[in-house]
Image (cartoon, rainbow, N blue to C red; front, side, top):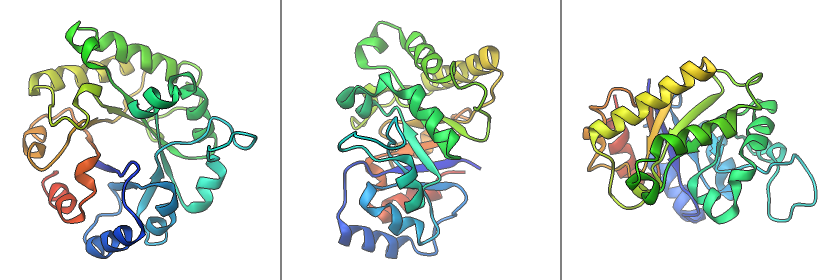
Length: 238
């Protein structure tokens, strides 16, 4: 069963969330769709028995870190998943320095991790994609191998140049890249992990993406914000 993750990012207000929940009521398979709303609305999804995660966690459990949110606080809201290493967090908040610490903290607190990796346009054009992806995997995994397993870590490949642009890699490029991610994880770390694709996944390209058999699911951004369109997208995923 493919995983479908809805990353709302910093979008939607209270009334929007209530309308969203009313629209999807009784229409979602709670075993493979995970919602990542903004923090104020996590509890709304959790109390309606949806799988829910946070878009980030702090690298410390408690302390004087103004503006961060503790994994323990987020667990009290009902999360069972968290995204770590999204490109926007890496770009705007320098999160690359904290990925391994956040993964350890999340796993130590029984969360399942969606780890984002991806190259920017310059790296893609210079054919450095695999070099970047291997480095990001190594930085995240090497200090956490004793607690990582195939049930608690999911990889999301998000080419940064494709996020929000309606541009996606070709089928052959995606097939090749995701196959090599899986091969690297197996060869170096003996891990068979699910690899999701994220980066402008929408109703216009989901059927084409579905022809790429190595994709284990999707991390959906903007296309998840409209409940009816998201339901239509879900229905196209096998």
